Length: 509
Image (cartoon, rainbow, N blue to C red; front, side, top):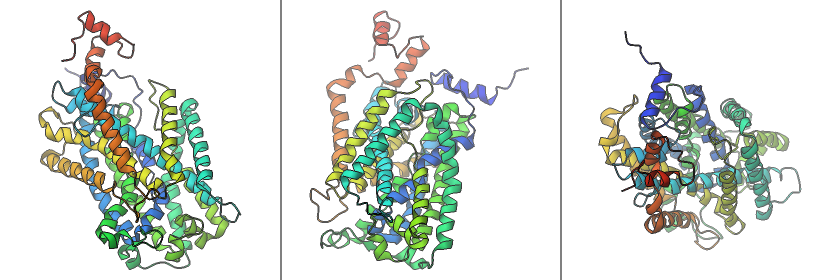
């Protein structure tokens, strides 16, 4: 009588089909998988750090309704991602998916440099920019909170100094404190669920007065005009301001691909990893909406909040409700919730020191425009959002264009698969254009949205490098899997070339 393979065996068999040997300990449940993505999404991070941007770029109505719209379309991206991770549950994530889903002979091109959309380059851009956004946002919160009840005066130079110190501390933790990361993740899950809920309830219950539902859901405000100039609602249209204003929501709901990267450590990964992706999006959407409307309903005076003397409207809301001491204590809670970024370190590689410190250096350089730009922080978050979502969308697009290569897993969307993928790809294309648009008027060297420059440089770099040299040597992960099957140590310098010379491995066509 044949034995029925266990879930663990099925997980390992699927990895073997993809060319992987099970090396990581597979002991994470769906709840743990979801929790890591939920804490990386960190609704309190995006909402708090971009709250001022939201108030000035559309106001409460765009922030509240925009959150609902963004959550709806992000779910399409999540569904597309979930269906792919169910079919290809590997820690390589979108990079590996692109190679597997591409037609035979195009694996390297698909995973490294497809026309106009180069996955690995945009993912690098997104990861560096999101590190900048999170850590620079934390530096801003530290700087503004320090002004409460003190004579401290924040300046761009001081904020950059705080930012550099935070980056170095995160780099040290990720370099030498790898074993503490799981503890930090577990703590973060509790803070982002229980902590955020208590925070929102405390704000709502303690607020002396509350704004009306009309204020929260129907008030439009255009604060994009600088130095007496009219805002973009007059120069272009209110719709222009509204679509730019949803950056706060879209930037916040990123990072759910962590569930895919954890699939090799998740039990029954073909089912639990896609659920981790979707549940983290759904729970974050609900928690984030609750936190957002709690803050909006609790605004005591819109004018003084939007143009707060402390430079941070959330801090101003807390001061108006709890006073200086209470505001400081709650802001400390918010700052603790900010994720200790650079992501989880793969146990097979332990601590990739050079990669970590390269991320530190690049993240620091990306924040330097803040010394002379009034929109540097929002530009960094735009870059992060575009970079990450392009990397999410590329495998979805390839799966849509080449369905014959897409062998579905247990999470199968059936006839809805193609329409959902199409909506996801179109939405990513839309936000990639919108978030490059200027959001301050007049446009000058201090208010220029340099997102389009950063994205353009990465696209030109990837296309140029592929055309000039990378296509001659880059083989893509699929060929590396073939080498692994033949017993070749692909990480050893010259191993692939030697195998080709001896006829063990066929040369790339």
